[in-house]
Length: 72
Image 1 (tube, rainbow, N blue to C red):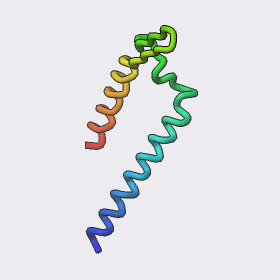
Image 2: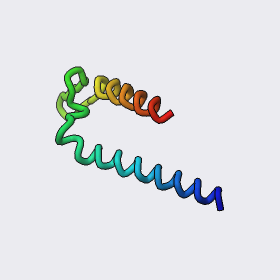
Image 3: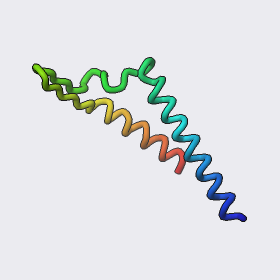
């Protein structure tokens, strides 16, 4: 039974993290303009558009590194 208890806890923790991540993605765009920060590359010409959120990627990488180091 011990292995099932730890598996259940792992699944619940993963679900909780996914729920938080989903809420941040859903509601976060209203408060944090991720993908539209200064330094993000955006190019539109005619029917072609190119968007490369370099600054957003750097910020998310830093935040995830800090969070994972705290959890570890």
